[in-house]
Length: 110
Image 1 (cartoon, rainbow, N blue to C red):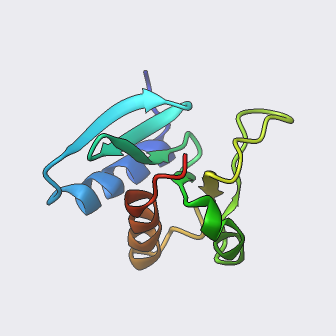
Image 2 (spheres, helix red, strand yellow):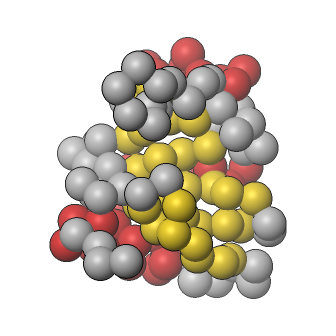
C-alpha cells in the first residue's frame, strides 16, 4: 500500500514515540498505518495526516473538548465513542501528538 506523504510523516513520528516500547506492531487497516501496542490497537496514521485514536468511551466528551472529533468509516458510518479522529493541525506539536498517543496506549475502548 502506497501511503501519502502526510500519512508517512505521521507514521514516522508515531514510530519514534513508540520506539522504546517492547511490544509494538504495525498493520495496514482503516485506510491507515495502525499501531498495535501490547496486542491492542492504540492509534492509526490516516491518509491525510490525521490520527485515529482508540479512546475510553467514559472520556469521550472530555476528549472532544481537547480537540478530538468523532471518527467515521465513511459517510454516515460513525465508529462510536471508542474511537476518535484527531486532525493534523492539533497534533502538529510533538507534545500534543505524544499526549494523544498516550490516550490510545492506555485505552481499551475500541
